[in-house]
Image (cartoon, rainbow, N blue to C red; front, side, top):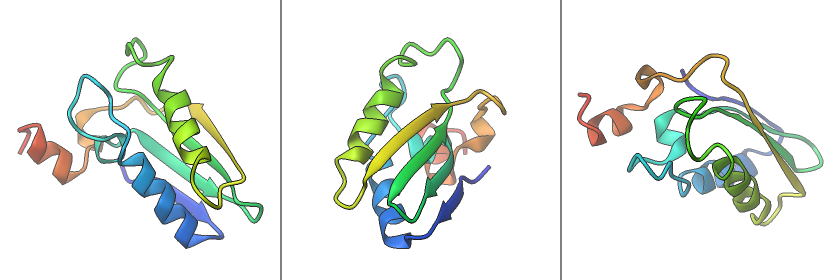
Length: 109
C-alpha cells in the first residue's frame, strides 16, 4: 500500500518525505516511510501538513513517542507552518505494506 499524497506544494511534500525517512521504529532498523507506516500526507495552501500514520501494532511500545517525534521533526522543516499527525489502525499494518527496500533489509525477499 503506497501512501496517498495530496499536495499543493510538491517541493514541501518531498522535504516531508525525506524527514520521515529519518524516523525509525527503534525495534526495527528501517525508517517509517519504507516500513509503510505512513498512510497519507496532506499539504495545503497554507503549508500546513497533516500526516496519517500507523504503527506495527496497537500495542507498539513507541505509540506514545513516535507520533510526536514525527510531528516535531516535520514542524522543524523550513516552509512548514503547522503539522498534525493522526494515528490510525485502519487498515492494520502488515509486512506487505513495506517497500521492497525494507523487505530486503529485513530479509523478507
